Image (cartoon, one colour):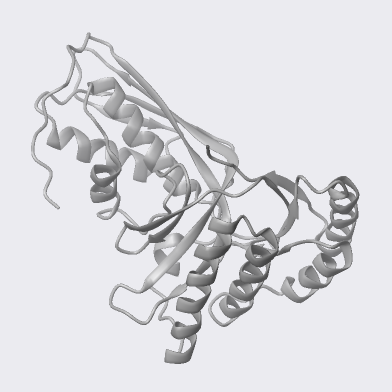
Length: 302
């Protein structure tokens, strides 16, 4: 998609500032390859962790900088936006995130979406989802964190497949196996999935679509566990069998993973009266297993 120069919707004052945010995800409810062209897809699991971006225009300067300095993709995106506007400006982009990098929590996607919105706010330039997608497709594979819902998303071509809806709040008791995964490098790995695997992914996506519509958390957990198991051939997680055992022992819904990351989590229904006890038991078992535990909470959308 070609972006043409855009004129600001409102008068912009010198030294204008734009601020915005984007949520992250805890891995994916489902990720794999469908039996069709552009078949790589994922289904998001939004969580209550965010990236905040702030763009401060520097009057009289055309120089763009970013803080922290290693957020080079966000700086590149800002440069791309400035190349498309009628009156480009210089300024400082500041990224502040509660999402750890390289873990499969959509930190890079959240950085970029928050950046596009913040720069757009400062310039008075609209940043609808399709415009943001067109920029991100030129940078890297991307999660669907620009949509306030659980979505099926073609992350390699950066386009929305379907909006599935929302689920009741869940807790995710998670561990991190350590290290970091580069999204671009991971998506260069040939997918070893067979035609039968692709048909199974299509069936799982259909089941998950129905489960979200029906608010069926038990079915969601069963599907996330199966997706984690199928992903083992692509990115093996040594702790997955033990996490499945812990999940079953504490009465969890299922195991969810960062398919292109290092995290694994046990899903719990936050509305279950037994949730507090299940969470404590899961956290203790996860601590013994991995020596680290973090609890996330999923986002629900009205």
